[in-house]
Length: 383
Image 1 (cartoon, rainbow, N blue to C red):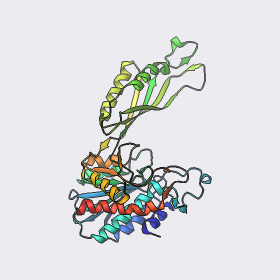
Image 2 (spheres, one colour):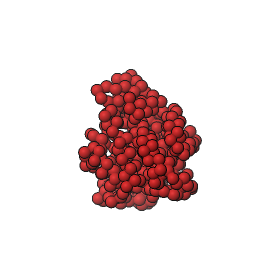
Image 3 (cartoon, one colour):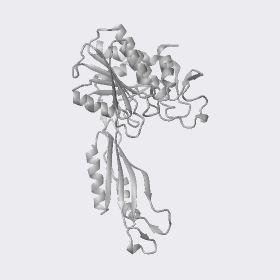
Image 4 (cartoon, rainbow, N blue to C red):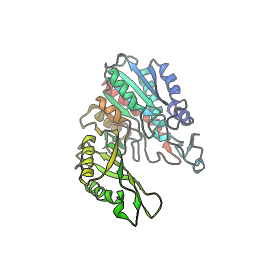
């Protein structure tokens, strides 16, 4: 068994459903510490985070610093009897390694560890620093104590990251066919529209919040928030949940709750979207409360960025592919690192089975992934 295959299997066997790391990080800590990495375990709340660095500059703020970013937590398996084999017992069938986290993203984590081991063994006195940042809180609903919190720690400590490679599964059909060079921002809101409860036979004595909200909802849905730009599609607005009523058909409800979300480009900011939304609600005379939650701002590593060019060249040279350079998909923890001033690019395995029953990764591509990450190290730090 190769080192990356063995480590991936060892990680899959650990039932690390968010935020439980289940021993993944201590396993990696032990490996890197033996090679001279300076390793810190950063625990916030119930979340474990690992920060490991290697290089001639030990003080925060000195660099350049190339960081690999990943997570050890996985989503729940769902009904285990729906899987062809137990989700936390790695199994190979027809050239694919099956198990929860195989693609998202224990395979990438293992490949990063192996690549860093190879790099520092071959170049113990390399210029600059390499780092590995791992969290057990990427798949959860809030991400409060994972990379978001670590980024705050870095900001306070004066730690500057120049380049960050995120191991999220980015490929569509083959390793290296797509990389992500940015992500849309995500802004959510919980909107409560207040009315007056009453009997449906006496509407003049009540105020139906559903009726009151309907014109405002139509206006929100019809609004053209921006035109996007060369790197991003236009900002989208969606209502993901709408709830009102007592369950009785003869009662006008007293309130309505709507969950809304913006996936927005760099053509807009969260502040602009909040302001415009509230202006539309006010224009329709609603009595409302709106609680906002900013999951992350949009970010982009522009064309011409050194990391972006290197990752493209690595995919071209080692995979024989010209990667699509995309800003699509949802969000990733890269959204917390980019505001620190880092160029961020996502490079990982095929994402076709992530979060699904029978999640898997192609073994041959898993074996090649450390080569890609090691090549990024060498081209970024050695020239």
